[in-house]
Length: 283
Image (cartoon, rainbow, N blue to C red):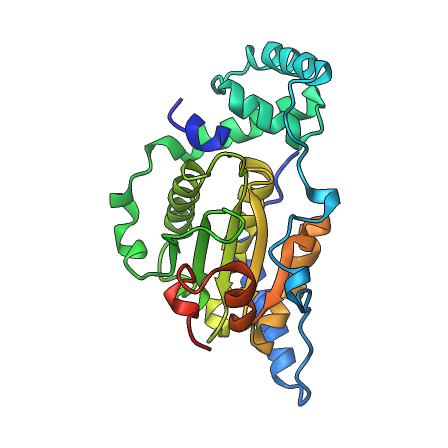
């Protein structure tokens, strides 16, 4: 299948209603704007020792070692997916979803079926760069040419360039899928995840798109599970706090993947001077 190379190296989803969430975000932002005291943001990273490390142990995905338990689970999952009406994943994809579900073949089959149905409904295999060229040309999101110090492909999102409603939500989803699958195809041997870097410098209320944020939650936790190794929020202004407060509970334990860092911390702990993205070379 066309998607297998990306997914293989790549539960019911919670769908967010864009309009109502945007209204909630505006109300929350207005509330914070009226406060004379700047609220403190979560700051999880303070030193090199705390950064550029593996995800929390509870979120780490176990390796595939070809153990007897793994082989048995794989056979069970293959039998279940042979009856799937939405397509047949390749073996690497089957193994990844088993690793995600801790070798529970029933849970892996359910999650795979949901993913395959979504790909069919959204026509994910038919997306082309020409369909999203105008939005891509804004430079709001791109795959960095260099990997981080851990060998992870790096996706950079310039939040101040994303204006809610400027492009359709579906087109923004298509651009996200293309960039992510391009990143997954560049995974080096022994690396399973990508790094997401959100540049929040200059973030304003108009940039807070919780409808798209909800899609990001689904794509990384349901359609491409555990492919996101860590999320870095760079130079988040205090006005970002309302949207984070709304979205954080939806992440549950996966909020542990998020770290608030400065440009200096990003340079010092995630890249070499030669590989740091140009947007972050200076404060």
